[in-house]
Amino acid sequence: MNKQSLPYTIGFTFFISFLFVLFLSFAHHTTAPRVERNREVTRQRSILSALGVETSGPDQIQEAFREVKEIEREGITLFRLDDGETGVYAKEFIGSGVWGPIEGVLAVTGDLARTRGLEIVDQTETPGLGGRITEGWFKEQLRDLRIVEGTIRVAAPGEGDTDKENGKIDAITGATRTSERMGVIFKNELERIASALGVEL
Figure 1 (tube, rainbow, N blue to C red):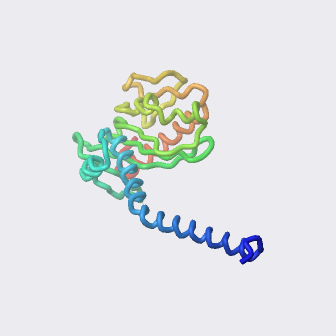
Figure 2: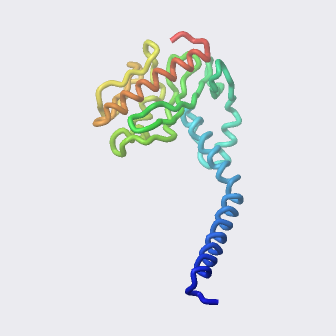
Figure 3: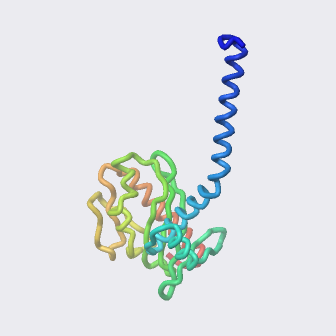
């Protein structure tokens, strides 16, 4: 067979492509359950983190998540953890950022008097600016923050507001628009949670 001929080149290319596709299909099929499990564990870890439950390792995460009750109210899915008189509720959200959607979890006490925590799952904000919403100092501001007049105010940029009673957090320096969008997300999600729980803000 003439290896320089066009039919040989086409046949060889087809054969090699077929082998690669077969290998990729096999790899996808065999790893799909593990990928799905990892995705679900990551989701559970985000919800637990917002609820204030610290975990490490997939087995511990899944064990801790068994204590969380998933409930449906007013078409909204909430995750309840029995903690204190009113319980704690977490809600997954997708809000509009500057460059794309911001996905996360916001957790609050059942009477909507305080936040419990915030976890950012995915975002496409500018690295080093709006992307800093994933940093610990920013999320820590939402840990046990008092909710004042039904909202969370995003104030002037700083290094993190440590006063948990004033109902406000510091914006991110150089990321005014992202900070404003986060304020809108907080407002919308608090209203949705309040509606689901039948609580006045």
